[in-house]
Length: 314
Image (cartoon, rainbow, N blue to C red; front, side, top):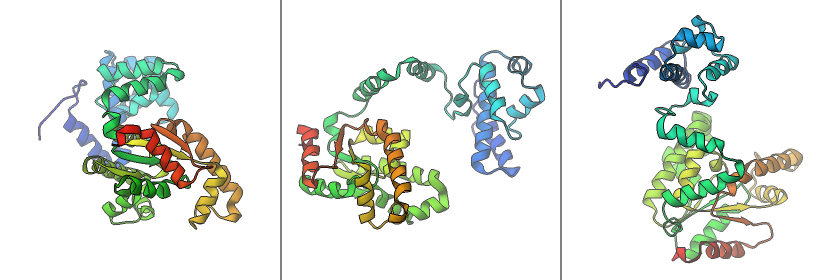
C-alpha cells in the first residue's frame, strides 16, 4: 500500500492501523474512527504550533500521561479535558473532531472569515457564493425539489406540478427504499439515522445526474443535513412549502399515520410540530421560493411555483 505522510510525520497508513487496533480492542467502528481522528488532530495542531507534548501539558493543565493517552487514541475523554486542550491549541473544540485534511490553508481562512461576520450578513454571503459557484437558476429550474415538514403538501402539490409541466414526479423516500430494498423504518431500525442519511445523499446525487427534468418531493429532515441540503440547493430549484401547525396536524391525521398524529396525542403532536417548524424556519428560507399553503388550493400553489420559477422553466 502507498505510504503517505501528514504534516505531523504520522503516515496515513499508520492512522488507519491505529483505527484498526482500536476496533480490535472492542470499540465499534464509529467510536474507533472518532478517537483516531481526535488523536491525529491534536498531534497535528500541536506540531503546527511547534509545541512539544510537555508544552501542551503546561499550557492546558492536562497531565502528560493523559495527553499521551489522547494522542494514542486510548480511553474515554471528558469534554472538560478536551476544552482545555482546544484552548491551549487556540482551536475551536469542533476542529479536534474534523475529518478534513485539515482545517488549514484556504479552508481555515474562509471558515474564520465566516465566523467573524455578523449573522445578518451570512445570508447575503451564502447567496453570493451559491450564485457564483453553483449551476445557473435556469439549469436548476429544470429540476424542482419540494421541501417542508410532513403535511405541507409536498406529495399532492408535486404530483400536480409534474402533471402541469409534463415531468416525472419522484418521492425521494421511495427512491431510497428501492435502493435499499427496505422500508424507511427498516433502514432506520437496522442502520440508524446515519445510515438512512447516507442513502438519502447517495440517491439525491444519482437523481441530480440522471434526471435533467423532474419534480422531487423530499423528506422533511433533509434540510438539517448540511451536505445533502447544499447539494439540493445547488442542483434543484428548491421550494419550501409550509403551513399553519393545525393544518399540518390535520393533513397528517388524514394520512392515518398514528406514529405522528392521533387525537389522544394532540397536545404533544402540536408542540412537536410548532417546535420543529420554528427550528427549521431559517433553513426553509434558504430555498429559492417559500409558499404558505394554508390558504391555497393545490392549483394555486402550483401557479405560484410556476410563476416563481419564471421563464427558467421553459
